[in-house]
Length: 92
Image 1 (cartoon, one colour):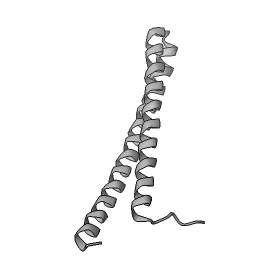
Image 2 (cartoon, one colour):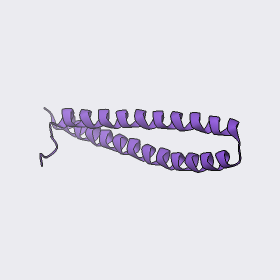
Image 3 (cartoon, one colour):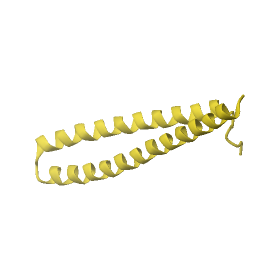
């Protein structure tokens, strides 16, 4: 393997991990969104806003689906990094 190719593969593996980190940051943002949805649900229920409660329920489900997608993306990027570099997580 040439030095140029090796260097490019290091750059690519670094980008994989940066993208995996971005997926984790997206999950954090969605968790914050879920907390706000939850607060809004409690208030809407207390005020008898049934249509709003139904909307917030659907928004909660959609947000959880987005989190699920981000987790899948993160796992995929992690697996690609391991496959590309051959570096395995330490067995504890």
